[in-house]
Image (cartoon, rainbow, N blue to C red; front, top):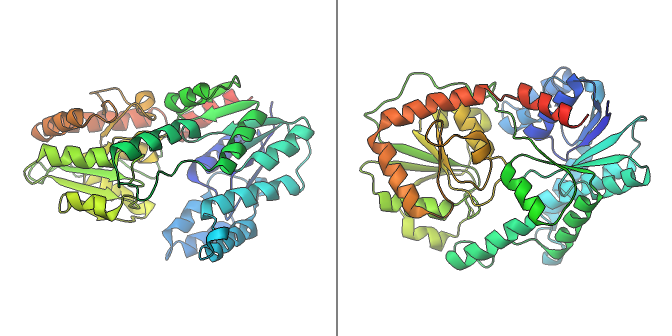
Length: 405
């Protein structure tokens, strides 16, 4: 059986669940991350207390994990955040918080002592290069987790969309800098296996020219955090669609805005929840068409899903959108595209809907049809919940532990 050192810079939900799944079958040696605490113990109690004022702190509690298997490099993460923020005023030193955390964590993991008896190192894109180089010198297997499509596929998308939506992204398309592209290429070259969360992401890796074995495993549905909606559906309320996540071109938001405008639903309501990354002048043409909520704590998202008829994610490049899975847990069906995990987790017109990417007309037709037939929406919502119940983190965890043996 393979013994794995798992490394992630900031203890996100997926990494936490993966660590817990590997620990359950005694495949986890150590989980090295940033600010985090195991589910039992004083550290977790502290995070719960902090979470009263800052709900995001509760996301750093790793459930079902023995504290002895968790190593928190809290100082590394906090220092990286402070340095990145301090460097913002100096253009020559500008470093995103993401880049600072991931690069610094990778460097730290490559330098600290590792437990003996490790067979494999499991690292995430942008935070694995130095760790993998150390593992390669010791002839330890390298497992690379790529949570979103390969950067070359995304760069092509950004360039195409900058032409389609001039001014939507501001000055220029956010393509990958050369230094970061070289880093990603080197990480993939060092990997012995690649883990991805969707067939779409797997295809993007194949198109990048790799011959490394690829393991495709969608994330588990987070049923424990997103219960099924209660209280039924109110037909008398306006037909409501929401989009949850970063509101940008990659998520297909310009296509959603165009479709919602064209659909012209009487009394219809569109809510965009998440950081807005579309330029203000571009959004002016849709003034009054939507509501925007910059941030809703994860603990409160279930209420948002339950208040909506559908979640719309016309993505142009996703790995496995957590908003899609969260909504399905709540029994709210999703409209999405093939450019993500939709084809892996949705059966069209049964528990959700798949529309071609960039197809405004298809979105308009479907939105109008669903607004007229709320029974169809309800049936899809019930089926979405059933789909979620069939692939929880329990099933996903078993699958990943089997795949990595």
